[in-house]
Every structure is written in structure tokens, then in C-alpha cells.
Length: 364
Image (cartoon, rainbow, N blue to C red):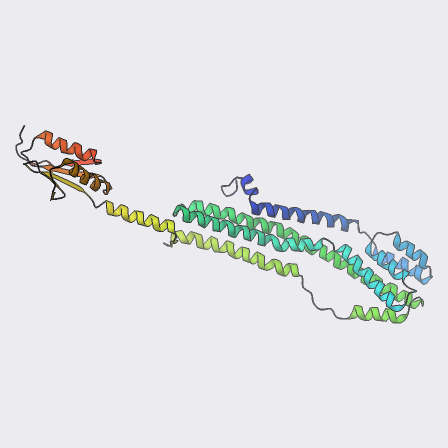
């Protein structure tokens, strides 16, 4: 049970199912990248020394074979650089940039998925919370009030989606930061190894020096700051979720403790019923039978027709909340006449009959 709701019912709600799907994608992506980066093992300084020694000895074929024997982006980039050493200058620069972009794309593949998950996780949870709260208030309006405890339980269940969204987004954001750091590290190593190989090739007259100068100028050119979009996008979503949670934690309890009322059609109808109920309590049925047998109902003389008298008594009793009938009679009347009047009042709907006794003699 979570907030008074069975776990299975909560799991099979639409928003929780969407968040579960997002979490599966996130976990699958993290496992894929963990396995991939776990296989990328290379001693970059040692590899660079071996390649430089082969290039200095002008053993380009052996250097190429060394690069092909290692499954890593850096050796593959070095291989492409060595193979294009005798090409024209424009082709060398283009080949190096294409090789670097290709390897970076392979290394950073699927990492962007974690950025998307870290961004949409809190927003999906927040959307589920808002929908749940709207449904809770709609149910409150339909029932004409309801208990605050039931409403708070519904809001607590709605807030579970926000908690799930944040719980999914936090690991995804952490994994995104770790894997992005690994991608940046590999990119930095490729840049360092590439510049070193270009310099060695230039020293051995295996490549035009203008090519190395052009690459060096491009590498040393200042780059514009590019902050992480995922971190910037994640912050507003989490802030909105926290603000919503704080709002309902503070506002909803005060709504029931500070005479704050919600205007709804059901509540207005309930108030109208209470007003009518209050008006009914003021109505009474007073019956007096005179010595000649005439009947007075609420101090008004009634015709001798018994059906007319019964109909008026029935209407007055329907408008009375307590269904109270007060009967008094002249002291000269017989008992059976008063008992008959009491029976008629009971048949017309009186639940309580009050008989006023008077002192004096009575006939029969």
C-alpha cells in the first residue's frame, strides 16, 4: 500500500507506466554505455611512443598495422592520419576532421538519451501530479465537500508520480555527466595524439608543414562556451516540481483550517438544502377541537369535511422536520373524539403527537 492505494493499482496507472518505460530505456542505455566504455582500454602515452618510433624510422606500414590491431578510437584516428600522409594538403585536413567526427559520434552515441531522460522525467512526473490533483478536486466538487483526509490521500498518490520522475531523472543525469566526461576525455586524447603524430610526420618530411600549422591554429582557436543543455533544462523541471509540492503542503491544510471555502455547484446545492432544512424546523401542526366538534388547524377554522382536514394536516406535516403534532380539545368532549383526532394525525404522517391536558370534568 502506498498512500492508502494498492501497489498494483498504482503501478498500472497511465503515468506510472510511462515513467516505467522511460526508466527501462534509461537503464538499458546506461548498461550499454558501461559495457562499451569498459571495453575501451588503451595506454595512450605508451601507444603514442610506439607510433612515434615507427614513424621516425619511416616504418609507416608497421605503424598502420599497430593501429589496426587495437580496437579504440585513438588508434583508428592515428591510422587514418598515417594513411593520408602522402595526400594533398586539403585532403589530409579533410580526412583527419572526418575521422575525428566519426569516432566521436561512435563514442557519444546513446549518451544523449540520458540527457533527454533527465529532462523529461521530472516533467512527466509533474504532469501526472497535476492531472491527479485536478481529478481530486473534481471528485471533491462532485461529492459536495467530502473529508479532508480522503482528499489529502488522493493528492499524496498524485505526488508519487513526481517522486518517481525525479527518482528516474537523478540517476540519468549522473550517468550523463559521467559518460560525457569520458567522451570529453577521449576527444582530448585524440586531439593530443593527432597533434603529436602530425608534428612527427612534419619533422620527418612526410607531410607538408603547412598542414600541421593549419591544424595547430585550428586547435588553438578559442572555442565558445557551450554549457550543458541537459543540466540547464533539468533545473527548471525540478524547481517546478518542488514548488508544486510546497504549494500543496502549505495551501491545502490551511484551506480546511482557515474557513476557506471552495465554490462548487455541489456545495451550493448542499447549502440550499441546509437552508430549507432549517426552515422546516419552524413549522408545527396545532389542532384544536371545540365543544361543538369543529376543528381549528393553526388557529384557522376548518370545514367539517374530514378529507379536507386530513389533506391540510398531511401538507403541514410534510413541511415539518420533526413531524410534531400538538392536539388540544375542549374539556366537554368525549375521549373517543380526541383519540380519533390523534389517529387521523398519525395517519397523515405525524411522528410525534403531543396532547395538552386541561383541568376540568369530562363527559363519558
